[in-house]
Length: 237
Image 1 (cartoon, rainbow, N blue to C red):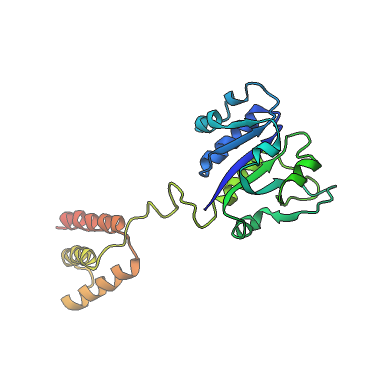
Image 2: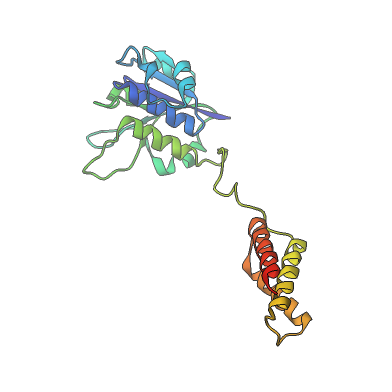
């Protein structure tokens, strides 16, 4: 089974570390590793809203070698301009597809500091290179933003389980019996208001049944329509 860790190498701004931790929390990652951070009090970053546990449990390392010791696959995040790279280059849009072929175990996503990024030695230490495609005018991305984009891309993998999906709040479709209740309420309203007198009772009910069927109402909407028909029928003398 694959799991992930985010490795920040020599980060300078504690708030970028905090923002990285928050991005990890948003998308279900918790293993944060920090190599030679500049700031002494980096764990106190105010930007780690909702991710304080990740900051407090983050492990600090002296070298990248130590941070990668228990990993089975590692990607060095870097821009490609002015880089002569021997490793495989994986662009962010195909990251998940590439990870399907990665060995089981811990996968490290390695990011450099805000000023110089990863050194050539850091990049060579990783198995592959991760590149976030950008326009040539601005090839580099802020550290925290790079982590956020990468964590979001990982959230698109098949085994990711979000807290809430776009359709989780959608009401269920009504049953046939529930639709018939609405048809009856509308039929009563039509009788009281003398609507469609050109139709027999059976024809009117069939007309209403087809109308309700074509509306594609969910349970909540159907209940509202039923209540509305009842109220209107009460007002018709």
